[in-house]
Image (cartoon, rainbow, N blue to C red; front, side):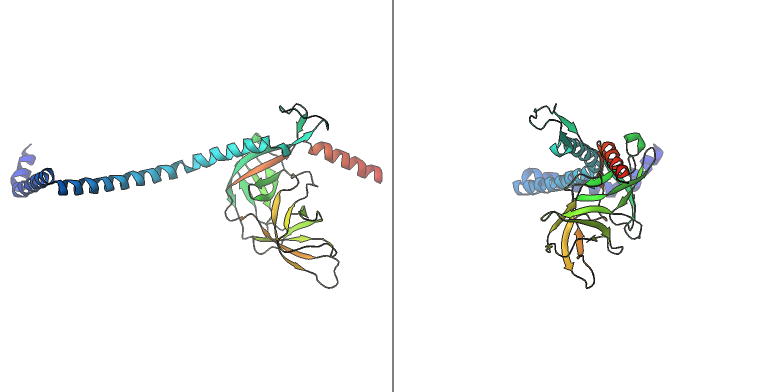
Length: 278
């Protein structure tokens, strides 16, 4: 209490001045409509700015949760697409899908680590064996093909992306249906090559390249990229086709792991056929 009294005695002139200033401003704004309106408008602007900043901060904090919710919703929608089912009966299809059998199942995942500046780039996602993931499952996103699952642990999986020298996939020209082998060049993560397409095939700049679906890993028709150059080197029977990939591997954050539920049946039949041919 003594300190407070000493403070008042020491600064009583300043405090009196401050009080008179507040009183003068109050009288001005109360008795003068122009000043009153100006003050209200200014205070509204300041309050609006504060609420805007608060809203932006709240939206930023909630962004992760919103992205996760959207990813889950997209996963559910993808699992309802007609392309994830095959007809069991060629003549009738009921609305409740009792005559259709699911072929592909999608699982959403978030990328927690990745690289783009190596010869053997990789991606790590936050889903693993506990969520049903296994090696050699396809990985896609809304832009198109991403890669294939390599190894899994309980809670994580590593993915070999297109931009890895060990990655290969069967791909086809969407316009003509001719297929070749998708390979990364090893330099720029934005580009790849479509190899082994014969020279007699009409390949044009701008042609879309999609997955062929031959490996039982990916559905057919997943976008990969577009043709940006076609060369015909001497002494070769094949085009040299360069693609610009649809996916920017420096920006990918969310992916979907694709499980082909009929893959064991297809591989068993193909292996049986190969054994009988020997």
